[in-house]
Length: 500
Image 1 (cartoon, rainbow, N blue to C red):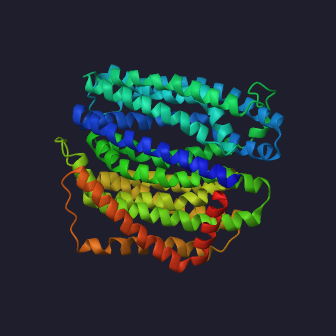
Image 2 (cartoon, rainbow, N blue to C red):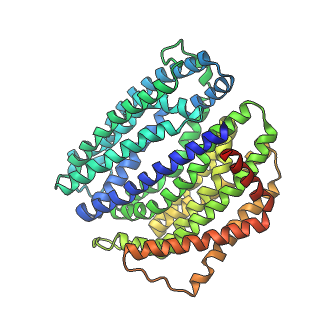
Image 3 (cartoon, one colour):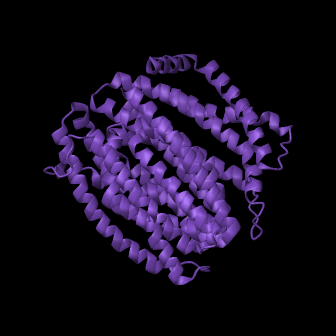
């Protein structure tokens, strides 16, 4: 059942990722070409700043999901109801605080940016509009999302989010093409939020008929929320600091450039993240049942498959990234977006972020939040301090150096803790897998040191992408099979079991 749930979550996640990537690439392109780099940078900066509202979550999501693992494994519907009822009450409180924080951010933010292309009132309206998504999440969606995630049925949430993203994309495209201001266009996109709520509520009510969100709440079950809160703060500081630092010490054009490059690697990291996030609840179920032999064998197979996938997509991105950026920004004349060195630097930073995923996802599945708070805090503080120092010397390049150092600490500490305290497998095997990543990347890239890739339009880019992807897949599979034949055979056997 765990394997089938994983496949369902994976398929749904891949579909959502395709929709999200389509929106994430196409919508900024329209905004760039219609409104310019400053508007694109402003919108990106607002979205990042507003993400700070997620901190008022106080770690509730992770704590609720962890608290649900045992009652779901035991099939105790009453205990499940008590946990989700407590989460409903907490989320309503969090939503109220979120409204207050959103208004404060909307009032202060116009005075932070150096150049304001839409004026103070326009920036206020944009900030409130973008922040409405967080408010709806807290008041209406979060309790359903947590239940589905813990029950390994996250594909229900994915369905509702796909529909919401499609509606958002259609409304924004029509609004921009119609010549509306960016403020009015963003306000109209809010129509997707009530649609998402109605859809997920109907899905949960149909699939979890015996679960009540108004049962006698069990507040004690969510006692890990303070530890999760500290971890959320550390993680959020690390991921959001680049754009915030560039907004304060750089320009909106710098923010726009960083965002455009980050499109490639954010969605690549999100793509590979689907394979880890879909497994988190499954690992949580295994740990809750004390099935540690299954945990060890499955984790080894998971690392083999995940790192093979990781180096495949990152090799392709490095080889195709420059030509994509050049085509993507060819109609943008107010800034130079083609920066090959920056592409390599941000690729390394995001590759390290991908490497750290398996270790930290296992920490979340085991609920070891309090034990690892210092590890995560040290990584996030490193990111901020080095970024603040280097941005004054190297500008946008300095920020990437800061994130690279932070992600390196994340990767090392997460794997060491997981292997020693949760999975109890050999550290040597994991180190070999990680060392193999850059070596395979060099093998994939080697022919292209002598072969020049000439691409003049997106059709040619797409054709080249197919050939490069196939070449990279052959190299990755061959090397992985030669050095980890048993792991490949075990994965094949697991796939056959799922089909059967």
